[in-house]
Length: 186
Image (cartoon, rainbow, N blue to C red; front, side, top):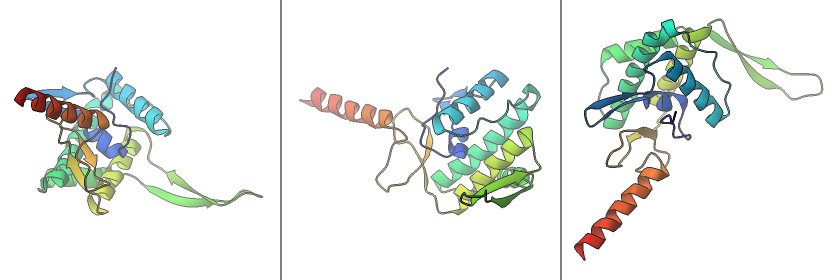
């Protein structure tokens, strides 16, 4: 399965991009538990992160509903609008479930490092991490944008003011379209 993973974006943005409207047709890459777990595994592989434990099929609706709220929040940032109080409340409620703390580990002869502890587990912990990251993106000055590609609806973090496309493949398609248009007008 080819998942819509850009490979460059934070987890919350990649997560929000798992559902989008393709000219009125909703494409949902989390429509089954198998697809959902496959997506999280592929994200972990691409980004070199710890793979979350499998999300139980019974939590599929909960994860999809939360994904829709994350998408509302991030799309609102990209569009300069308010996402609606329900989405803000959903993100805040999930973040409140984090129940985490940080601690220092300093092995003998080693260097100190930061470690995290959480009393949350499973799906609750995963959604709490996503919520925390979403809040970070909304409040840390990150600039979210929608891809300028003609048929693309993906969100991305604009790290550079001139970036207009979510991925080089969208940029290349736009260049090819401009080239074809120039040829047609000659």
